[in-house]
Each structure stands twice: as structure tokens, then as C-alpha cells.
Length: 153
Image (cartoon, rainbow, N blue to C red; front, side, top):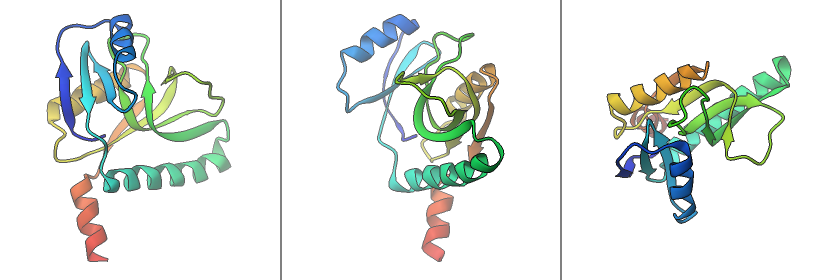
């Protein structure tokens, strides 16, 4: 996920947040983190490459061992026990049977691609939220490390 661009402070409920989203441009990317609406900058190309490569590899493995699951990138997830938490995750493994909703209510693995703009507080908040949804969350090597590795090959 790209760097934080803007925050709308105040304790928003899920309903208030979804109402707020309806007033925003479709080009903006927002997420609700424990009651605070956070607008994200677009992810970098390296960030997207890492997420897509991981999703591809996971989907190859899932087709063999768990064809009922699929790895998707840049999707919203919801955690029933945390109604003021509607983040957009970099990658999540979800049920293959998807619908047209914006948020996956059940997810099995979440992954966040780290960038220099991610603070410890921000990542801890997201990983705690994913854990509340019974996800096995993880943070992956940062964009800078991947960019250095790509430049050396």
C-alpha cells in the first residue's frame, strides 16, 4: 500500500465511513483504521510487482492444494469483531467463491508490502486488525530492498 496521503480524524463508524466514501472520487483510495479514514497514495510500481509476484506464486500453490481459495491483491477486508476497521490489504487469500462486494468478510492470509512510509504504529494497527479476523498476517520485505535487488541483477 502506498504512503498515507491524508487522514480524516474522528471516530467514524462503519456506516459513517461508507457514507463518507460515497462522497469521494472513485480515484481516491481510502481505508478505515480503527475509526480514522485514511487516504492512501497509489502504490509504487515496485510495490505492485512484489504483490503480483506473490499472488501468482500463491495461486499456483493454491490451485494444487486448496482450489477453493484464491490470492487477490489490493482488496478490502472486514472484521466483524472490529466494525471500525475496513482496511485495504496488499494481498489476501480468500474463498474462491467471490461476489461483487468491496470487502471480503473471510480471509485466511494477509500480506502487506512494506515501504519506507509505513510506520511501526500503522503496520501494528493493521496486523492486529487482521489477526482479529483470524488471518495469518505478515509483512514482507520492503520496496527499497526489492528495488536494490532488481537493480543488481
